Image (cartoon, rainbow, N blue to C red):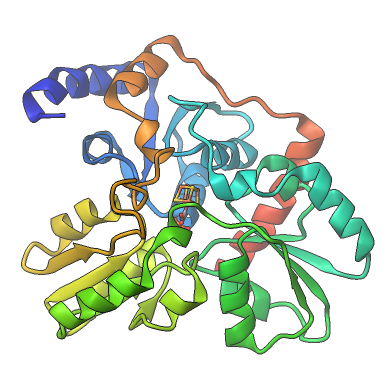
Length: 314
Ligand code: 13P
Ligand code: SF4
């Protein structure tokens, strides 16, 4: 969308935000024009903490469904709006709450650590949540002899298992369609073409990609690394929406998106994140629907698992 088309919508959104005491929280993977309309931009951990601390009356969550649900779990008295409720997450959907409950029942002595990319139903079955920023810290906070279930991302789980050397950690077999699709062959080719470039990757990528990376971290950690690293060029192996923020923050550096196996599929873009547009944000703020509504018992159980995580980060 060009700027002339965006400007009247951005003005309308600004006006609605002011009238309704609303705040827009957006994930780094959303469209650049959506990022530009946000009051706060962040990775999933930063957005959860921000939702908890805002004094706005309405939170509009420009991101995928589980992220807006997380905001509602933490802020039950606020109205949490989601401009596009169809924006799901392949990772969250790879872990059905009833199936997860059955798996948990088979391992009653295990504590459950779940990545925040889960539905509220799975969070309610979880002892402690984590994000890609703090997964290592969360797992390390649990005594070594305590058996664990880690879900739903098998790549993040294997990575943490490798870093901690923990053998008592069972993994749920879920994955993200964006991060699983990166091509090792094409990444190695890019490295040959740009020998000075550092490779940065999200831990949702497959193990063979992570082994090739100079740095592995959450979207926020990758941004910090690119700012501090003594390099002017980076090959970025995560969702391509993050490049807008990289270019904004570090205009003197070059960022090259790593391609997926099938370059015609555009799958280094999360199709769910891109479903959030200025149009659906404006309509959602104006009509104050769709709103996230949760069962209170499930919400309270899910809240405990998120607060246990936030506690570790304090
Ligand atoms: P972050 O925790 O890095 O924000 O990642 C969320 C996500 O959906 C990654 O695909
Ligand atoms: Fe979910 Fe993957 Fe999209 Fe992140 S990039 S929101 S994990 S589908």
